[in-house]
Length: 412
Picture (tube, rainbow, N blue to C red):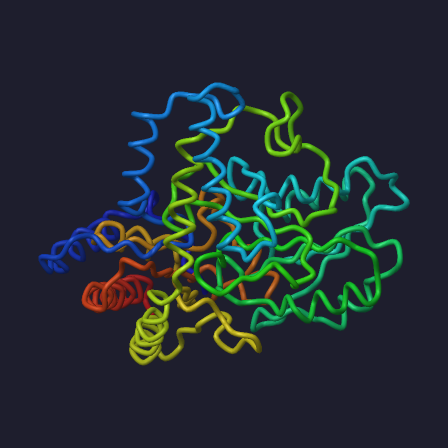
């Protein structure tokens, strides 16, 4: 049975355990950041570019004078870098937004303005909250929504997708890689099914995939794709939506004619240049290759030490992001594990950081059919380009000791 406690409610003995763990795990190491699917450290080149732009670029990109043209050149160059990251046909297909959430909402806005009877959205139960909650809102106002299921390995039922498609399907919104488990979805197959059986547009949330796996939009058949700068070494507060030439979307805000009249408002030049530099750096996927062996060694050590531990999504048919590991320790409390690791200087997550205030079971793991006692004992470890083999080895030692201590404390 899962212990009914959380870190803020620890008993005196529990607080003593926490203090003992943090004292005993003094390895003379710096903190280890293993929560890169929540956000990534800003790359030094990115922060330098932002600081330089703030100091030297004062014009409005919409102004016709020299200072305005200088700002516009920076925006245009950054748009080209983001377009290159996605393999877009042209930089015109990139719309800058405030982040992945706005990009997702803008994409699902293609449903807006249609009557209740001709709106049909197909999405999955394992999407990020930005898509899932937007879909729930659309369903509340009369849109017909089909929710695709995922199996225990995190894979989608493509037969269910095929059966759901019809001539009146409006939009199919399916992520490229899950932010909690790292499970990758077969977008090429999905596009083939959708295009062969409907006229629906296809939106892909690639927020946690961009900069980790190759993406090429040129001949992909995908109409809309969301990404976010802070997931790939860029600043927070800036993202983008790829909109294929010829696809019409409803503007997210009205005002000036910025972003091809699809998102009004003066461009945040310093954030855009940071996004552009981050996109240029992230286009080189070579640094990601070493993360696979690091992640696999981490999982091997943890599952050998704790035989009942389960790596969620490891047996997926398509594959996972090389940096992501979602591990369940049945019968334990993931929040307690997280807080003890926090005290020891190892930073992980219990799932989606956007939902960290909600102490309920992760909707993604629930949708996958992960048993409650397993889901409650899950932590997500997500590596970044900056992580080294040595610090991950040291962090794994700490994770093992923390899980051992929590197991002892819970009587397991």
